[in-house]
Image 1 (cartoon, rainbow, N blue to C red):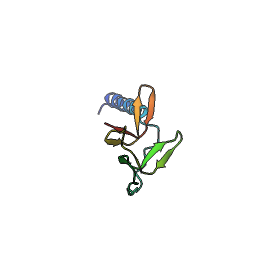
Image 2 (cartoon, rainbow, N blue to C red):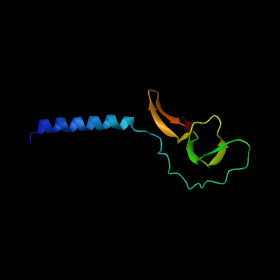
Image 3 (tube, rainbow, N blue to C red):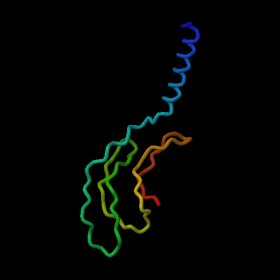
Image 4 (tube, rainbow, N blue to C red):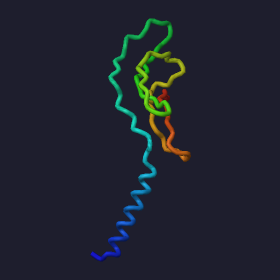
Length: 100
């Protein structure tokens, strides 16, 4: 193998891997969910929905929020756990929320 094409290929691979490294999320990955059994719903006149336990970002680390029964009114039917989103301004924490 000729040294010049090999050097060019090695340089290209190095540059591409450096670019990919800058796009990686610098924040720690979201931990695995903790066991969080669903309790019996409280007796109430309003319809309730179970909000699963989830991790939330405190600004310096993850904080566990245990599952709880919440009023169903005003919520969509689907629960979305929190996640990191790569935006034009950098990585932003998208907190857990209900979606429709």
